[in-house]
Image (cartoon, rainbow, N blue to C red; front, side, top):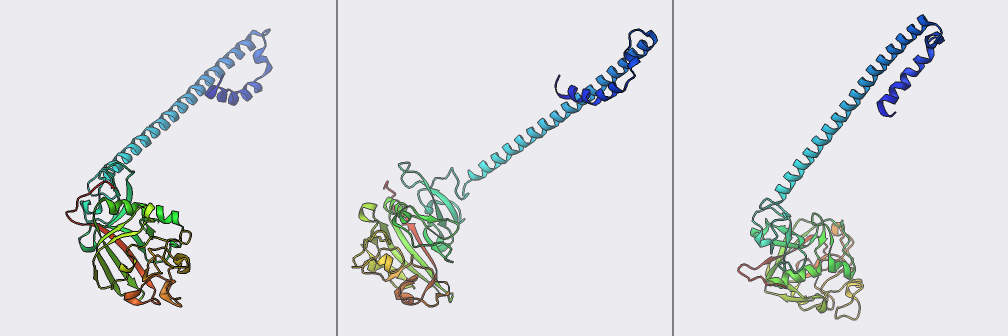
Length: 318
């Protein structure tokens, strides 16, 4: 005996115990008749209670099953709508639009997009495409604006990348190599100081070598812009971090100047150095600097390094 029936019996058992003993006596016909009638009454009541309990239980099960079905249907509808949205043209990060570069983004919406730089030879990866600056098509590989992310990092971290695409980040040297070797790219460096002054440095070409070349600044074209040239000096320089000294100086420039860069002996720009809010009490070169714009003691507030595929350039597999 299980479930509702057991529950009902537990309810009526005390009633049975309260009945007079004569109700169950066999030697007194009239009393026995009365007892039989009482038993029938109880049995009928028991059946009634049991049926009501079973019906209530079944109704509860039906309600639960109906609710479960409704939830499943609603979940399925939400998933279908999300999938449709992610497959829509121009949606940032759409699984359907595996782009070769940010220049292929069909909309003017800035945000994360998935790139398939090597046509399936390597895993696609997410990048941040800037679609508002100078007609769009720019891929951001370095972004700093508030010091929320520590850029004093190891070789492996600079190789793979760190931070988040919706905040401060470094995309990663290996990705930067793959992208810039898949097609010719130009470079734009946008800088702002704590007084709100903005400068731009443009270079007609830009490419980073592979890990075997220590991710050297392999290609850097002609300079133009308002920020004055503080990067051409680093052309051909190998990338250095505090735990991988690849510079031309007797000391480790990355450790000495708290950064990671294409140092030589040591630098004219140091955009991955320590973030100093307000630029106060600056120590020479141990801050974010672009020497030929503001000098070594003038800390920068914002920097954004971006590359864009040169129009008409043929894409190759890196």
